[in-house]
Amino acid sequence: MDNTPIAPITSSTSSTASGLLAGKVAFITGAGRGIGAAAARLFAREGARVLLAARTQAQLKTVTEEIRAAGGTADHVVCDLADAASIRAAVDRAVELYGRLDVAFNNGATGQPPGPMDQLSEADFDRVCAVDLKGAWLAMNAEIAAMRATAKRGAIVNTSSVGSLMANPDLPVYGAAKRAVNSLTASASVTYGPEGIRVNAIAPGTTLTEMLHEWEEKSPGTIAQLNAQTPLGRAADPDEIAQAAAWLLSDRSSYVTGTVLRVDGGMRA
Image (cartoon, rainbow, N blue to C red; front, side):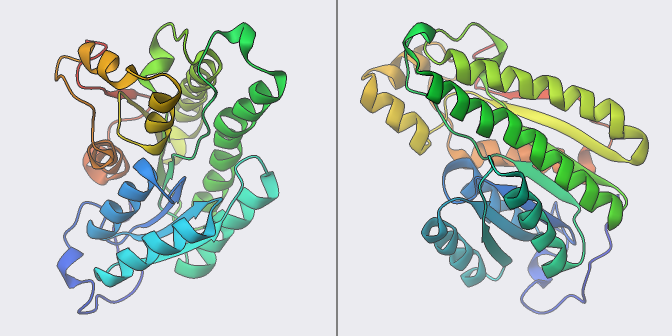
């Protein structure tokens, strides 16, 4: 993958010149909070120029300002993953700002009310599939087009879930949508590998995000139960998940494509 910086190194970026993602332009969805926000901060520390995308302007602005205050290069754009035009516009904004697109982290998602699938409303089913599955498909299509037109190569990481790798009675539609994302990831890796575009996914285990805390509020004891099923005996910090995504997007994983990397503390070992 082309690792040439897209602009001369300045004093504010010299400390990241040898970073894991130095010289790359990164697009991140779901970047306003949780794993996506952690990834935005990490990717910037590792030398990338980042464009943060999510639905909530205030959250995006806060994370962007944090990155800039730390000496990184970042901007943000409001984006609705269920809207094809919104996704295309967000990806185009990355190219407009930075001249190219090298890597993308499709992390944005929505959850479902926990419970048996026969108790989930059709509206909730449609919302989960529109964001978690169709949104990933739309994002990859836009990102691949941008990579072809600019960097000529690239890497994409999709956020799946350890819940996609097993029965998921508490979150059945969320798990099904994420399992479908695994399939899209594999198919894309085969389709676009000959063009030098790698596509992988990560499957986080229990991670201390807002989504998990919302699940805990609705079903008290969930985190303790999940930790009891995890050999490491604890939940992950969002940065630990972001670290895995950063590696998969970097040139250090140059021969890795089509994989779903478990980052689950051993839950599925």
